[in-house]
Image (cartoon, rainbow, N blue to C red; front, top):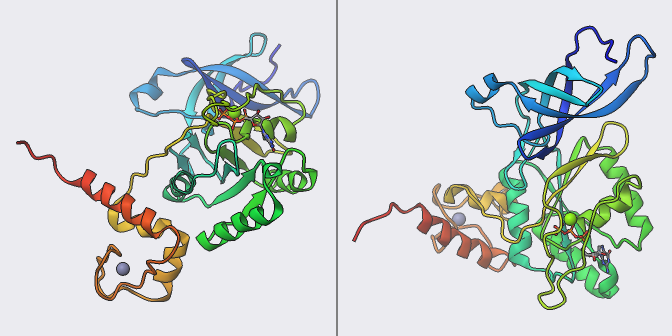
Amino acid sequence: MNKNKSNKFKGIVVALKANFLIVEIDYKDDFLDQSYEKIRLLCTRRSKLDYQGLFIDVGDMVCVESIDYKNKKAVISEVEPRKSFLKRPAVANVTLVAICISVDEPLFDMEQTSRFLLTAECANIKPLIILTKTDLIKKNDLILYINKFKSWGYDCIPISIQNSQAIDSLIERFRKTKLTVLAGPSGVGKTTLINHLIPTVSLPTSSVSKKLKRGIHTTRHVELFAIGNGSLLADTPGFNRPEIICEPSDFAYLFPEFQAQLSRSQCKFRDCLHRDEPGCVINKDLERYSFYRESLEEMINSHLPYQEG
Ligand SMILES: Nc1nc2c(ncn2[C@@H]2O[C@H](COP(=O)(O)OP(=O)(O)OP(=O)(O)O)[C@@H](O)[C@H]2O)c(=O)[nH]1
Ligand SMILES: [Mg+2]
Ligand SMILES: [Zn+2]
């Protein structure tokens, strides 16, 4: 029985289910007690929102009305402007992108890892690398990975589901962050980590394919889970090749190691693309330079207008 007078609540979209949206609200029954309780409601959206062309995604802050508490249903009547948006996986209002990369099974891939990092940089959200399955390599090799990421300009937290120390510091970090998205290739252990961090959650996981040593796309939808007081953690479906969509002239700024050089000194030409221009300050010996260069050529070619014949 609903005794709330206004019957209108603010909430957050925690999952999409076919044509419905699952919205979590903090419900307080004024007549019974003063404590808040989180409830999840199956929602449709007011048709006026469709006319306004407002697309709603997981992470969007919304207003729900016409709440039917018995059947846990409601209608979304308003959507708040987004503070940030990660395109793929699609999540709104993200405050941290934790890119999960495994050292093995699936094997580490520099280009793929960079593409995930660049996707977060494109959305203007600073990423954190979580290096998973560290039980599968020797300590010396782990140090090489940590140094590699440092040279790219990133922090990395190495974890193994068998290593509780690193897991404890991760929980602390996620509890201090409003909305963390776990992103990365299929099979790296994103869902396994969530099951481990949040004992009340028990999501399906699968072994990687023995033949291909790749994940088998077990998670199919984005879903937010509560971790600590008011903080949320998103499980997302893994995918292999994030596409980078940006202007060629902006591309170098998405690499922290290039950005550091460009902030110290300037290239001779303002429109330098850091290829073979004279007076370019970018160090071509950096590990990711050849990846930058190849991706830049791809980007420039895809920007060329299509010519018939
Ligand atoms: N050795 C080892 N295996 C792990 C670790 N974490 C996860 N795994 C295994 O990796 C496999 C894939 O894990 P999932 O959690 O399903 O991977 P995912 O990233 O969610 O994959 P998708 O949902 O397909 O994107 C499972 O067999 C896990 O048991 C770890 O720390 N060490
Ligand atoms: Mg998964
Ligand atoms: Zn240059």
